[in-house]
Image (cartoon, rainbow, N blue to C red; front, side, top):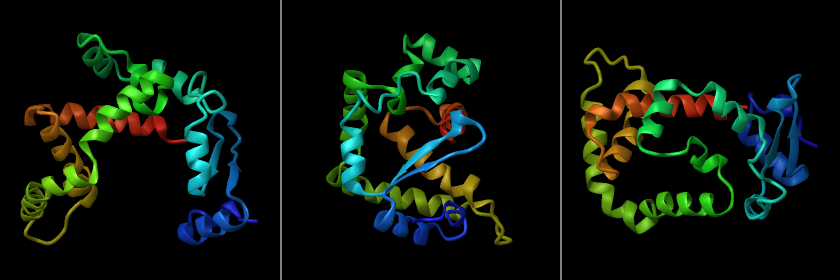
Length: 179
């Protein structure tokens, strides 16, 4: 069976071995709230994704953490818009999950992404043109975070002035999702 210690050294090799020998692998830590199930086969992922009763987000430690750890500024933004923080796609179940997923999914179908390609290419070129002339760049900050942030804010008609708040909220969500 796959050795989880290899996961960080050889991730692709490790995942290939998991798909072959251990398609469902429980990764545990000394903190039981951080235990996760690694699912490596597409059929298993689809089966789990369609079984909200067994694999519900309700009561999950990370979803519970969401209430207490979320930055008050971000919570205020949601509250001002009459939104429930629990309606974030990864923690929603049932009809709420389906409604939110449909909103997001529709914007990123292959044909719609293809139509966006010219402005995304232009955006990529602008981001690269803004790299420092000395050739050194903090790639995650200057490009990897900026590209999706700018595409998403444009797609949802959000002003560029809101990017820093959106990035802060996104960073907080990512930190809370980290097992």
